[in-house]
Length: 114
Length: 115
Image (cartoon, rainbow over all chains, first blue to last red):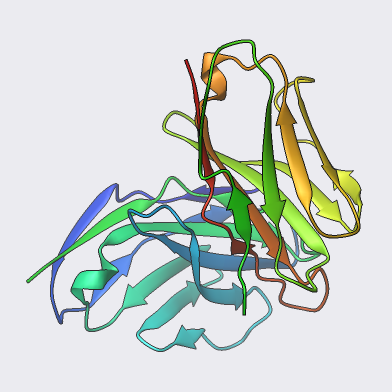
């Protein structure tokens, strides 16, 4: 079974600063994928970034990067140069390779202040 | 291009009534997923379709819940004899269903309230 742990219920950051959202995971699968989704107040889950367990390099997508430390089983999301529109819930999720169900963490609510 | 769409966006029903929730996946996506998001339980997987078959129904909470998918496209989640604990946001997602990276893209959800 897989488990995702997000220990930060809420985070505050000032506009233009960087912020790290923590995610640790537990799995016995040899290969897996790690995902981050953003859920603004409108409710839709927006895909941000993906990291495969087999990838040697950390994933990056624009202002988002994933700090993947396989030995520590962590997959932290780093948002650089925060913007007011980044205020939302952020969910870390994982699935075994084979395009099956996602297991989600409990989420972190990020508030970006001017 | 069009994303995943769900209808209705909101549904209020009385306890004991049946409800149907609809999901239109992204065109060409063969895999379709239903999840439920509630305050107490977080985000929970319900069922996964590959084409019209459902190889993983492990998340359906009871036999009051069923889902089908026709033509490898539209899916309907049916909840019979709704209970108050069924109140939640029901999210649908779709993916290509193949390849090394199979990202799931979500619809806006259906908010179900059972009175």
